[in-house]
Image 1 (cartoon, rainbow, N blue to C red):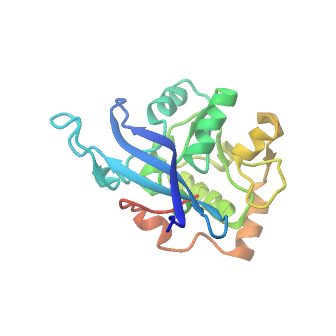
Image 2 (tube, rainbow, N blue to C red; image 1 turned 90 degrees about the horizontal axis):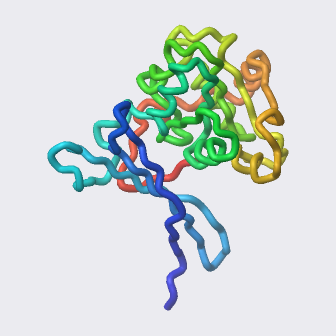
Length: 224
C-alpha cells in the first residue's frame, strides 16, 4: 500500500554564531497528504554541541543555542555596525528571499510562530538604523510583530526607529516571499502605524503566553 504522507526536503537554513561558526541547521520539508492533496510544512533542527572538538557531530534539537541566535547573525551585525536599516522577517524563507532579491540586511528567529526571546532581541541593541519588522497578513503575524516591538523596546530602542511592514499581496496569510514573487518591490511594502497595531492587538489579543517563553525545538516541529 503506498504511503499516504510524503515528505520532501526543500531547504536547509544554517545558523552561525557571531564569529561565523556553523552551530545550528534547520531543515525545511514539504509534507503532502496524498489522500487529500493537502500540503503543509515541517522542520527538523540540529545543533553542533562541540564545534571545536567534534566538528562533524550534530544532534537533534537547537541545544544550548536556543536563546542566543538569529538567522544570518554575522551579516546582521556587520550591517548594524554600518548603521544600515535591519529587517526582522517572519521566517528563514522570507529572510533569504528578501536578501537575494534586494540585498538588504535580513534576519529572523528560529522559533517561528512562537516568537523570539528577550535575549535574541539584544542583538538589535545599539542599532542606529531603523529596525523594520516584516510580518505576514494574518493574526499570528500581527501578534508576533507586537511581541517583537515589545522586546525591542525593553532594549531601549525608541519606537521611532521601529517600523512595521506587511506584504502588498492581499491574500490571507500572504508573506514577504509571496510579495516578492508577485513582482512587488521593497518600496511597495505596506507600513502599519504603531497605533493601529495596538488597536488590532486590543481586539485579537497578544501572542499567547508560553509560546514565546520556551522557544524549544526538538527533533521536529512545525512553524510558519
